[in-house]
Image 1: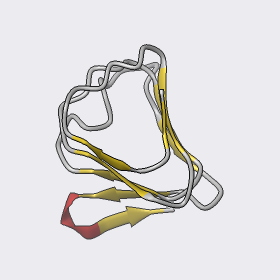
Image 2 (image 1 turned 180 degrees about the horizontal axis):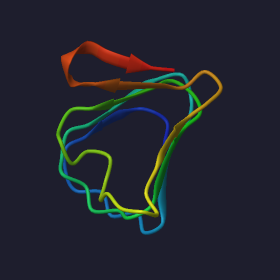
Image 3 (image 1 turned 30 degrees about the vertical axis):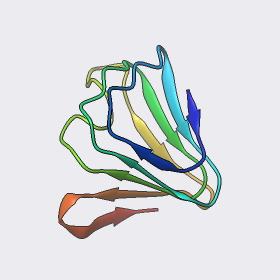
Image 4 (image 1 turned 120 degrees about the vertical axis):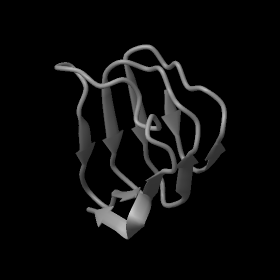
Length: 79
């Protein structure tokens, strides 16, 4: 699935990946169940819960590139 901005408080089950692009802030506050990679290529993605970035495992990674930014609890910012 792909998002440009807004707030997702429910559960995301996008299948094989989640992509964030565009200049806006996207907040993920739910415990999400997608199993694969998270790509942030533009704007900011704020993980507001422990499970916001989907399931963990050998095939799950988070990549930040371009003008993208990952924001975690405690004020940690990457990108």
